Length: 170
Image (cartoon, rainbow, N blue to C red; front, side, top):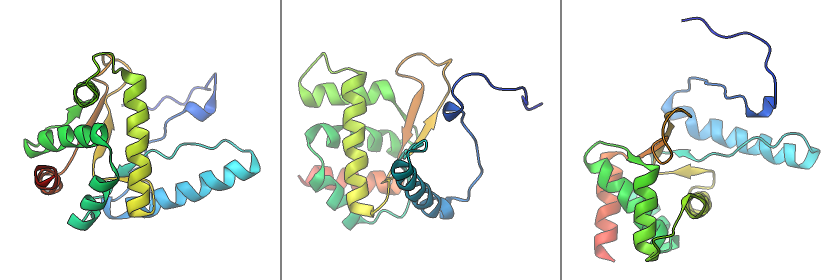
């Protein structure tokens, strides 16, 4: 495999860098990136992104707090991810959109609605954990994938089991 080192054209802020990081170090890396993004906003530099990441240290108390903050659509989305997680399989963006549509009782619930609801889940995750964090791993399968199949979300089985227990007790 040969890396492409040719000059890039276009917006360099859209270049994706893959940097291997130990799972245990992810919260510190995201905290650092969040701080850098906040500084960038002040200085006017490119703000970057604060994509939520999986934090596998979610306790039952954390999940209860997240559940309490979430509205029914958010709960349905996270529950769909948990159901897949129990089978050790990721949930696709389309599956999450379908769960959101059912919870909203709106067949026109689209990807824009989905993005907005994921943003709210991110906001609630930040409230619970103090940094951009989800009890879910996110993966991008690439632009060649069809709409709804590109992004996948996976919840570890132990977190999924706890989430489903909390959801069932509602």
